[in-house]
Amino acid sequence: MNTSAILIFVGAVCLLLGVLTIYKTVPREGKPPTVWTSTEARATGMAMLVLILLLGGLTMLLKGIF
Image (cartoon, rainbow, N blue to C red):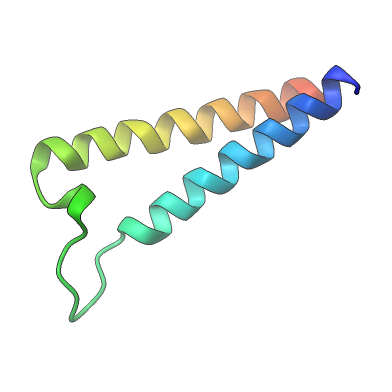
């Protein structure tokens, strides 16, 4: 398998996981906050995780394309 294809695939998976994490942790009306954002420390950790996933995924995707 080509290295570029692997980078594109893993980058897309990271981006998908980052977007899915953002979608699941956004507060909704009438629902309690998620377990992952119930405290300030957990919310900070979750924000760092999302940033790592999005930036890492974007970097791998661009590296695979170019």
